[in-house]
Length: 130
Image (spheres, rainbow, N blue to C red):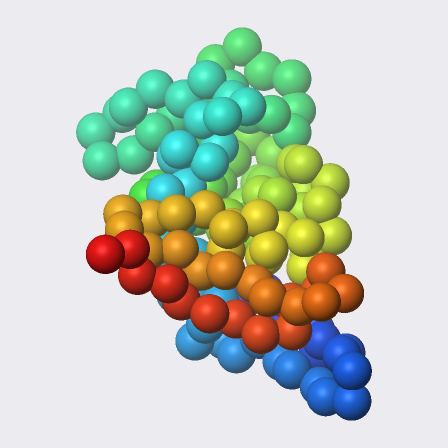
C-alpha cells in the first residue's frame, strides 16, 4: 500500500515531519472496522467486514473492510484507502486533523498524545498507562 504523504509541520522556529514509520504505526493501531463502523453499518464476513458503500448508492454490499491489511475497498466504485484516507474522504477532515484524531484514540493501555501550545502537532508523545 502506498503511504499517505506527510506534510511538514511548521512551529516556533522548528520544522517537524511525520515519518512514514510513525504513520504506519498509527494505522496499525487503528481498528478500521471500528472506525468505519461508527458511521456505517458493517457486518462480519469471514475475516473481513462488508457493508453497502457509503461513497455511492447500492442495495447489495460491495464495500469491504480488512482489519488485518488495514484498508477498505469498494468493488462497485473502486473507493479504497486506510484509516487516514477514511477520515479525509468520508468525514471531510484535513490530513493533519485526521492524524490528530487517530493519534488521540487510545489503543489498549497506550495513547499517542500531541502537545503544542498553539494547538498544532509540535511534539508527539507516547504515553503508557500504569
